[in-house]
Amino acid sequence: MNIKDKLICASYILIALAALPATWLNNLAFMTQPSNAYFADFFRAAYVNAAAASLTNDLILVSLATCIFMAIEGKRVGIRYLWLYIIMSAIIAVSVMFPLFLLARHIKIAKEISLQSVPKAA
Image (cartoon, one colour):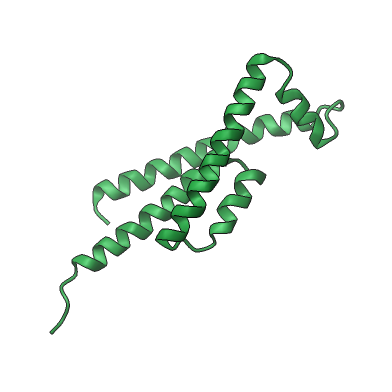
């Protein structure tokens, strides 16, 4: 892998590492409030006003498009454990799992390119 590929991979890792606490610190803060005992409370709060509803709808729709992309592209490229990226996007956060999927995809493609550039023995 060349330096450009390594920088791209590092950026995906940094985004995923930033996204995990950015999402889960808020999730945990919400879930530890006594009035938010159920999963439905989270979605009810996500639609508390027009701004929250807009962001929620945007996130749901971009997550759907992202999962479709991961399924199609992951199958095309041959990403192992593809189903895990999609399921964990819903459980952990799409902002964590999509950069990790892009990382796996980039590594897979970079390996294939490097294998193609190796001269074959006669």
